Image 1: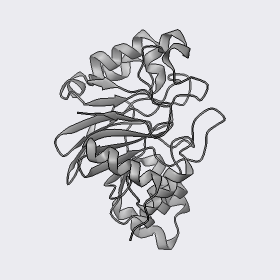
Image 2: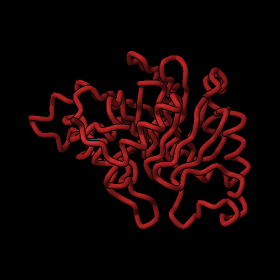
Image 3: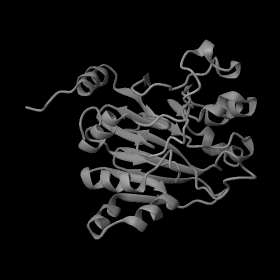
Length: 270
């Protein structure tokens, strides 16, 4: 008989009750479910840089072991090759441990994996999908069974003076032709990037978007969320530890924002 942990019991009760849900892992790590379809964004990374949450060990172990609620993951999405979002070692280990998981990542991250992959790990690259996009390239579309995967490169925060070489991918993923979510990585909150593809952004109304918290801290960022991304709800991620979970304790510009601040938090996507 399979051992039931507190995590698996909680997951069973939660996911039985809500078929469409976002489950917060930490930093920009989010699991999205639609029925039995499950995807992970930025779930495995080694660095907190002294200010961001790490995924709890119990959650990490459950992901590698394929224990509920992280059993039968369909795909993992990586936003960019930074230590607070991605680990090449962990990604290879997960693909070895879970033979049905696919990985979608920018070319930089995939090259990082290939650099350290052993001969025994070469076979996992059959399930690795690299996206190579330059700034201002048109969005691309990929398909996988019950997933519609769309990707566009939006510069990393700090543009145009810093980090312009980072392949930051904003993923828009639709599960089961039913639930659409947008994961924005460390996107720069300047509308000039999003204005390049107005038809792309206007074609879909996502159930939810997961922007880095700084989108809520400026009129420009909020305008992008409202007028470009257009999701029904926005839940901020990449929240530093020093920003409290209690809205009234936050800086004034973030008090009305919906933020993920505690691993294990959930949001309905229905």
